[in-house]
Length: 251
Image (tube, rainbow, N blue to C red; front, side):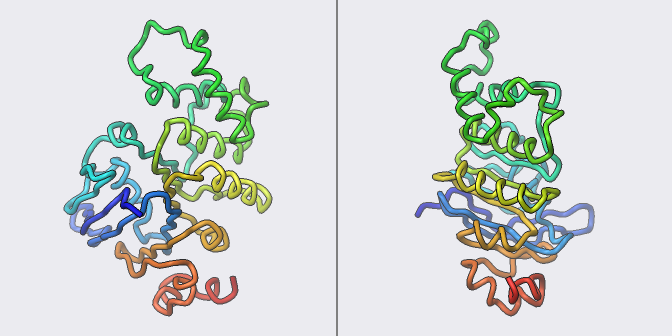
């Protein structure tokens, strides 16, 4: 299986404080990969480095064999990498359909074609409705996005990532703040929507992590202490001491 994302000795300093300390990691094309670790481990910072929101201090990040460290987020997104945030990131004043259609524009070669009337682009609009059907929001197509329930907004955010035709989708705590039933539905949606794509996920719910992930990386104080299959991570004494604790033995 080929490598779609490769981090080599990535470091990030904020002033004199080193937050990410020499992270090296290869993500295989098509795999479901979870990054876990205690609060303050640097997980969100690592996400920001990969997606271009922060510049690296040193080291390289390659996506599809192209170096992307320190590139602006929009350039990285156009290469086929999409991410979500801990706080929902949608266009709240647009309706649900318009959010998805906006995400489809670049990947469908509309880009700067200001002379196109989007309402008359039948194929584009059909694709948007198909994505809404995939994420279970077809009946909410004309609903203001900002008025959706929280779990529906998270589903819309996932739909935006899919509509952008991303090959790699990065989710940051996708079920945080959801009820148990909402989280179960969200996990099934994530599995279905990311089929055939590469998924990287930061998540604190270990039951979800062990259910979804093919491999798990454990980040502690900015360093990777283990990367392995879920069963081996569960049994890893160093990981248990650093993070999992009773979760690993009782889950």
